[in-house]
Image (cartoon, rainbow, N blue to C red; front, side):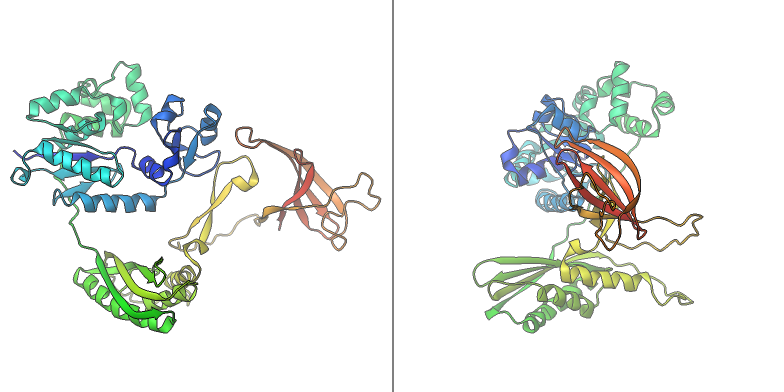
Length: 494
């Protein structure tokens, strides 16, 4: 009978955060979607749970429960890189591995035929756990007969488990608490109110009633738990990384000679990508310096490509912007490929001379010259202060413009970061308040105040906002900080 296994690296984002900050291990730690008081807690460790800090709460609410709370953001890129690294380690133990698309840190492995390589499946599971522990991850391995059975067993336990038969697996799965699985928290709360605390009680519910009362997602979980649906393992094919390197006879600082070395290495990478029917999505550079240091850089074209000239142009911009402390003695490059998609040429060319592809190429050059953080876009956040209600996120792809004809002309509000300090206001001003200087004239109209209070959980703020119009016609957005007893210019309405 075929055997399958599940490796569960529980709360992978939280483990990544603790790896980056090992000094936090004795304190309550949470992973938030953004490092703001209004950020949502996504993951919480056992110390945070003991303080009553649960996922779904605001970061500010967690700080109100424990002043020792530490929190941070784990990016999707960091999680993807961790999953790729873990996948590379797991390929040593099974050639067929399927990472979960729904939950990061869950991997399903084909355990059939491994009895010829290991004394027992218990020893095989222990080897996987020990290998991941060396990498800094705590994992639980369950070996059984069904996809959902080993998943539930891995999520419920703290130690490895190997089932000897199907009957033992089903009996163990029925005792798994619902709170240990990846169910929607609202669904779990509803089931607990009905007295359904274990997976066995959930399985015994009538299928039609589950869909009608709890929704389609609950119905899908119910079918998986009952074994009514089956899907084969969808493994990710293992591939060796595409790398190349070259040692230099003497330390090199000349950009042209370094680019000549990169051109030779890049040709071999592009040939290997073409054999795999892939295109280059990003190029990772590692420059070893004469003083023992390493400089790591990454350049990404606007779209996956096999054009060496375009990639070398981006490399030139990145290398020219580096300030190396010593000469380069070794150059190593790694290519990250993407599936090659064939596109049919359009019958009629676009009417506009400015297309999205040209804009993407221009932004790629800006990223190569000034770094990935140079191209960003504004995104809205929840916050009580104006400067906390928006943030900046990297802009990866441009979207086609969608022009419209608004009925009312939009008003643009320019926000200064940080706010500009204004001179103190005199009690008696015979000619009016010169908030913007003599050239703009005195203030002739005032709208306000609009009071903003909050921040008691971190740093309390009390502000009174005003819109003021000067004689020259400028509308300024100012506020009085009652804690600091000073006036500031927050922005301007244009």
